Image (tube, rainbow, N blue to C red; front, side, top):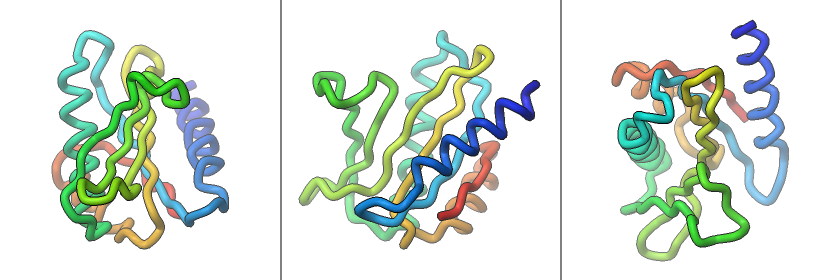
Length: 131
């Protein structure tokens, strides 16, 4: 059953990467965090976002969570540049079978393989979804 859910999540992630205004690639970070571990999930989101930003050669970034934005979901976050609010990454935190998986997507110009390698070296369970 879990393999079927993972396949479905990968297909949904690939759909997010379909051609639009900018070319995107993405990854899925599988966590063991449940609803009681929100602070750990938040920390992981920031760490993964920082890794993406480093390989996207983005200047200083901040996380916009959009809790007061009606066009933004509760578990949706963006990494934006501090200087001019340029897009660096976006993610969706999805509760699946009691734990969170986090789907990230970012510009295709970022070094996808280096991002996945670095996150795996940091101990994250990652599924890469190239453009």
